[in-house]
Image (cartoon, rainbow, N blue to C red; front, side):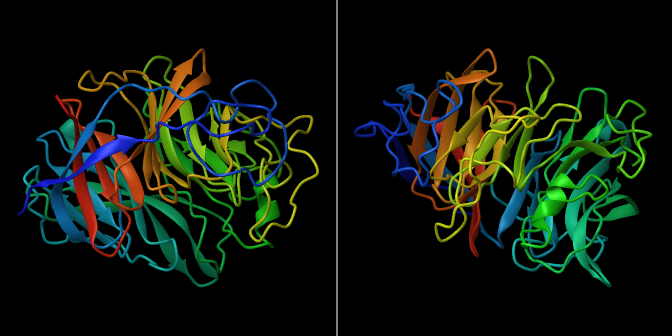
Length: 398
């Protein structure tokens, strides 16, 4: 296993020139795709927040096939998913295991495959893990969540139970969502995309379906009695919030316990949101965006009864996962870190009273960043979305 310094990460220090949608002083980025004004100060292009941190990037492992998620086991090893359908153990020294056996069939097509993996709330006692994947079905495919027992040797998953299926299925290769987050009470949030096709896009507003939604279920797949639509006719009771496009990043605020998400827009309109029970987040009726190729999508990004994003990016960063930084190794406790796919950057957001007050970007020179995770010592770990996917450890230069 080779371990070496890949690069000295530098941040974007230059400010944008001129004004962009009425706001100045943000990090360097391209011109916006739309001329919609933000709804409130610092909703986009917040002031640059330099932390004067230089990041050393250390390659720990390579040779993974489009890794999608990374989670730490109690012993310090990592569970890592590969989109092609393989789940592996990777040590801190970079040793990659053979694929863990026992997982169900995965449809690895387009953006789909084996996606997120998390430890169950009682993993230390029952060794249950949960994962999301795209399941092949007779009428297409759909995001599915299963759980199973990881054997003591961490070589096989047994006693598998499917606890959730997105419905309806669709014949499309994109917008699967699939991020999994347990809250403090042990309930599971699942983020779900609207499957990308023009005919499925409007279903984000149709609550008889599970497309373009965030759902909340119990760890066994049952529905919590206090879900916002429980007992309503022609509405799926699993739904927590709706009007989402493709949420691939989520984490709990370590102070409040609230769920935060980052969501892909098309051409402009990536969003940061705090999804509230029963609320409508607008897609595809409102967005700070245009369609691919420049076609207009909406007349206005504001509509009564629909929520405004806490923050948005135009042009997009294409957010992978997000992480609230909880450690002390970096001077960022309480900040949000976002993995940038298109931007190929690590994006830091400084918060105050649930608003973004500053943004900083680190150009690591490693390609598309899919996931960011934090180990117990405060170090950051990222994975790259590529044929020869890598696991990289980030440390502040002393």
